[in-house]
Image (cartoon, rainbow, N blue to C red; front, side, top):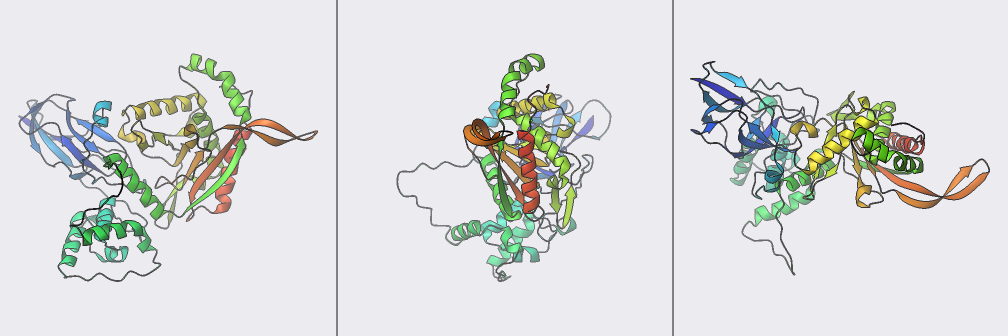
Length: 460
């Protein structure tokens, strides 16, 4: 008899932990090769973990709701192959549509977001190196920040807690012990400095509401009028937390521009039937937008970066995330890797495949990681423009609005005239810590110019 160790796999370069949602097999049960043993979740996607061998599940090392580091042994399976004890890693599989849509509303919320994407992890090691955020270079997981917000712990207090985690990291145990001691009067809450940069890291509004609930836990919230109460699903909670933290981390500035995309619209109308017939996929506006963005990123590489404390990390790879609405109403951002190395046909196929997989819950963990810039097509829902929220740890996100026919003044060699043109608004939100208005507006104008100067005679 031999024992095979199942390892928590690498789920993307920025993801260092995953939450165990459900064990589908219990100790003593027989498992087949590639049979799903458990389900896990990150902030990006839910995945199924298959068995890498055939045998009897001997031991489960983590329970449901546990947050497990990448590289950790999560279970052991007894086999009859006689090869001795070994560690086996695997690629998680995306949840099926049925399982994706039937999650219970009481699923665990302890899913960690990682802000940095600069660390390469080895799946063969149980240890891991947590990445740093922008809070004085010290790492705080969203779980710790969430507990701090719930218990009214300010950033001033949080920074004084001695962490027992790797490199002094404050763990869940540390923050809970601090809260317990504070309630017992063993520690006093220091007064936060008004206007402190660190104090802004925990949302004031969240703190006020959560402190009220902590102070009066016996008082239920009263709702007046004829209302219906709907519990957020786990994914919506994660999205909400991600958006709030982005606003806390990055000072957002939004610039606006408009583009005459008549040439692009007419070209698509002309080629779309032949394109689909020849390439086997449809040509939408999305790959055309991405193509223009990629060209401009090459001219303005600072747009394609992230921040690690006071270090600017300029990304050489151009990985474009595209915000995609799910049938449930939630949002996910699959990523087109190395978009600068794809031609228009390649971009179109990537856009369509990722969108289709997103709608049917077939995305893998790697499909939603590694993004360096995000595009949101708010026009697909009829909006003229939007003020998108930055997808951390990126520093910019661009939104394109609905394309509308409008009478506009155009310049001709014979003077100005009024014509019916296809017009579109563009808006870009960017992190003012690193991108000033001049760069943000210049980049956005460059994208608009790329779209306006679309070659209507081009081949695809």
